[in-house]
Amino acid sequence: MLRLTAMLAGLVTAAAMITAVSTAAHAAPASFVVSEDQFNQMFPGRNGFYTYDGLLNAMNSYPGFATTGDDTTQKQEAAAFLANVSHETGGLVYVVEQNTANYPTYCDWSQSYGCPAGQAAYYGRGPLQLSWNFNYKAAGDALGIDLLDNPWQVEQDPAVAWQTGLWYWFTGTGAGGTTSHDAVVNGAGFGATIRAINGGLECDGNNPDEMQDRINLYQRFTGILGVDPGGNLSC
Image (cartoon, rainbow, N blue to C red):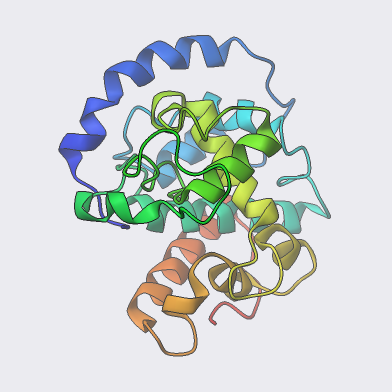
């Protein structure tokens, strides 16, 4: 799920260029602890779909992101989010899930609302690879966007894609029992964000290489931001 084809990613690039124009017109936060130059340094080979402006616009939906606590905490949260995003998308290269054979498996028919967009419509998309019909439903409800009926918005609109990533960052607890946002701002350390996002598969010795890749990215990004990464990096 975490490695996607360049072909599939490329198909959405043209649409992304169109939607990026409209999203950039929306209000953006006054400041972000990651400058555009630093963002480009973190993701030198990124897909044009993942725009810096799209991230800024998405941050309006989650004003606590990278603004909570002191300057060190804010930069650590930004680096932690972007490191996990980089791991999930191959450096912001891939927009949709590579393994198309998995696509029909993300429909939970036990949900009362079913899968109105089709059984194979809820595959991984966006910076944290949103998947499953119930996650599209929950994210859409939180964001005021109909993602259950039209999940393709996540691969067509950069701001919507970033919004879904931030939605999970602020709401998903995974195997950790705490959200990634709370883990960082409460001092639990970067390792707790790994546990919240993919702890069941990577933590406790399950996949140390994947875990270490996230840690390496986090350390590189905190270096770019000139901030100490803190402790408790592993899970």
